[in-house]
Image (cartoon, rainbow, N blue to C red; front, side):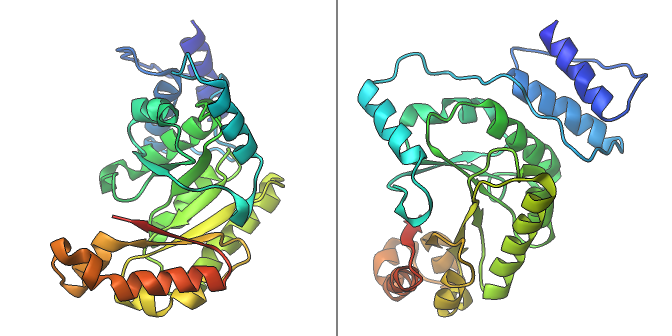
Length: 272
């Protein structure tokens, strides 16, 4: 009955007064089921200024140590560059059960990924699912980061997620400070329109030789940039290097990112 009630709310939000909806539950998580309903409505041409969000918070964690809870609580109230980001857990943006289970690993940051882990045909469904997850899933104090897509999909991602709990936006394939400022400007615009006062941080990702050469400018592009990350595997592919020799072939690039981040000032990170 609860699922039927909230599904009716979604249809009402989209001004659909007469529709036949067939739901195949199969133990689907409530927030995931709602996201599927909304995706179906969107694909049929439905539009709405204020996207629906899941109401109830869900968690899959029954027992948590008091020490871990205390650490997460303290870190959750630390902002910007000072926040602990020792561990990032990347979670595909189209897999709701992995989102629900992510907090069990006790990472400092959970990255809901809309980019590499989601096929092009599923981008629209994934961004709706991520928005519902941001509102519904208890991430136990982990920083809530969304890695958006690049190019034109990036702004569609931001339209969907800003104002629904995202704390940091990870920007892939950064090669120019102007792009970082464009993303930051879009976020500022959405925050103003949606009356969002909480800060939203930026983490640009360097993945190419051009990005490495522009690292200082990228890291300094916005006051909201709190860190700079290099994707070592993608960088090695760009330069045609042997991945097995990655530590040597990427030394200059990694060192450049460290210095660029610290000069900004910000935190340097590496993913592989």
